[in-house]
Image (cartoon, rainbow, N blue to C red):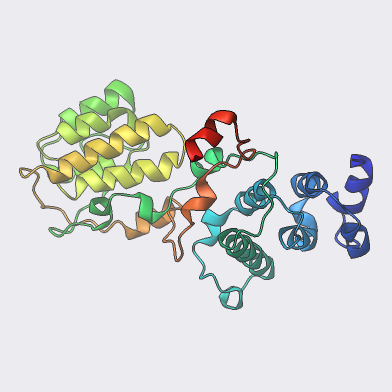
Length: 284
């Protein structure tokens, strides 16, 4: 395989030559072109690849995830309804890949691809416990930071933030801390343990932390989520302060998915199993 030739013809050009592409003869060549292509140069050659009978399952799956499907879930799977010309092309690309996968179109080869690292990069609203998306009814909160329990409510962290939480005189004090402070992840347990934490404050804390940290500190985020859900399910947790989470989940780049990513697109692709004498015996 002449990789220099493939790079020259396909990696950085906006006008690839279909005749040169049609002269390619192996799945490995298509995989190399797909992996090395600069998406800023358009997706024409990628469209050729996913429609080619030489395309391997691994190559198609790799292109599906490189197309960032989580981002595109905010659109309908109908390119005509998408304003951006580039996004319309990507929608068509991933639709082709999904349809071809479902029809068993792609080649099973020795080429590998595992999408697991991609699965952890994005969160949609479907991944969030429903309880944290419902909001709470109650008294309209007073978010004036000047009425908080301390002057450094925005930037307090560590022991200073713990002291602010401990000195809260009522629910509104705690609500203002959670609403304004930028370092909640290190003190979320203390907030949830406060007698003033209710069904408005707990989800507010969750969404403020999710907005701040997005998809980093994943272990701490998961633990925090579980404990917030536990607090919300506690019968003694009251619904006193009003909270509507929608604006916060939008700020946290949480997507309301309009279509689902098929489970088959989330599984790794590896070499097909070579039948052994043992496997033949099992079939007898």
